[in-house]
Image 1: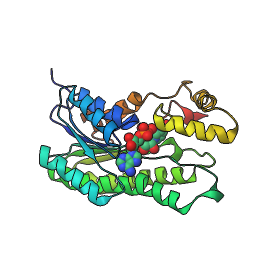
Image 2: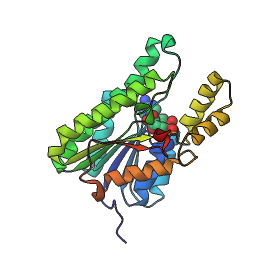
Image 3: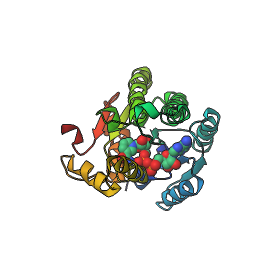
Image 4: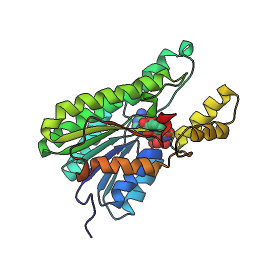
Length: 260
Ligand SMILES: NC(=O)c1ccc[n+]([C@@H]2O[C@H](COP(=O)([O-])OP(=O)(O)OC[C@H]3O[C@@H](n4cnc5c(N)ncnc54)[C@H](O)[C@@H]3O)[C@@H](O)[C@H]2O)c1
């Protein structure tokens, strides 16, 4: 049987865990060769092994997205091995939070380096290969933190809003070359990151992490948090033939939390 992504090459950053891992597995389950790129070696190798176990080609690339040189090497390896990049998903990201008056300069520099510079670099490195092919899809992972407002998350919100800016400009610039560029804005999704956030924010609000997650779920229309696979499904749609006329969008995959 023909699969939706047979013959496709997909590069996922932040593939070791969470949404990136679920995305790598989703594309693999539909026939794509997947390059898994992450700074965490063991977990990322485990993702690549799980991809290969689905019967497709897999690459595990150890790379810190803060380093342009490291990303250049990783992208070059994918092109050397497989000759193309059809889809790029930029899921590598970190969360930090706290009062506006207590933001250490190094913390700001670090979140900008990962969430913003890292994404910009990945987009700029995928674009020439996709343009030469005359076709490609870039899906950047933003956040509902770019669409709604919460206290004590200025750094995260700023970087995730910036990801939408990169996405819109790149969509205009790369559209004539047959490349679509979209952002996905997940609501709270059950990954290691959200559990960490829950514990940290919960403590500040005088509640447990579990209580904070219950509160977030109660704020959605569907009264639950997302499974990473549900975000991966939307990402796969954006890379599919059905989404070729969809570009420059920042899609809310949030269970309706924006409505409250
Ligand atoms: N979980 C949520 O509720 C949620 C909501 C909105 C947006 N997001 C975004 O989704 C993306 C994935 O987050 P997640 O929830 O799956 O968290 P996660 O922590 O499970 O995944 C993030 C991945 O990025 C990798 N990473 C971090 N810094 C890196 C670096 N410098 N170089 C390379 N890789 C690096 C980590 O090793 C990890 O595998 C992030 O960009 C996050 O901001 C998550």
